[in-house]
Amino acid sequence: MSHDTMNFMDYRHFNPKGVHMTYRLSSILVLFLIWSLAIAADVETVGATTVIGSWDLVSLENLGADGSVQQPFGEHPVGRLTYTADGLMSAQIMHGERAKFKTAELYSGTPEEKIAAYNSYIAYYGSFAIDTAAHTLTHHVTASLFPNWLGGDQVRFYELAGDTLTLTSKAFPAHGTQVTPHVVWQRVRADNR
Image 1 (cartoon, rainbow, N blue to C red):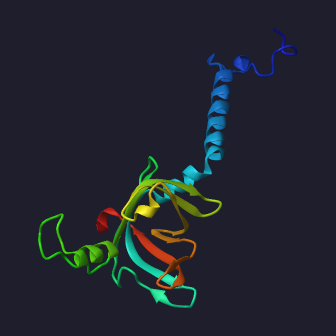
Image 2 (image 1 turned 60 degrees about the vertical axis):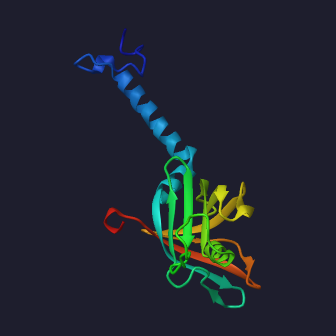
Image 3 (image 1 turned 90 degrees about the vertical axis):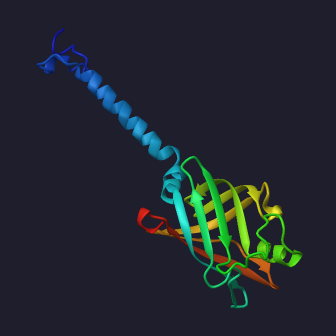
């Protein structure tokens, strides 16, 4: 084949070791396309990786439309929020000074003790989706201590700053006023478990 009629993609004649550079270029092009598609295909996956892990509760306040601040789980609430790489989540929050039942029997307790226990704890789990454009985390609830959340979605607006995750939601009625929850979480690291 003369130089003039040689296919412009056939670089074999320019490679002194006889390695087909065509295959190398094709491989590089395929890898580049796969990489480009992976980045463009799912921005949400990139966002999800930033929240994967466990988070300890720092604070929980309900900010009232009237300017009031409610702390439904006390001044020092305790909680753990977990997001897994396979898209599952769980959340548990309790009052920092939760009263114990007078008896050690699991399914006992007075009606008053049971009401106090229910009012001082919230827990649910399910799967989650993240929308980085809208800055929302949607918790698809599978099971919940509060039965009205079963099978529904809990949408949270998020702000991530380093190891601090702040979640808020739309206002809802509580104790006679509209409140907006403001929940701050700190990423759990090996040195602070």
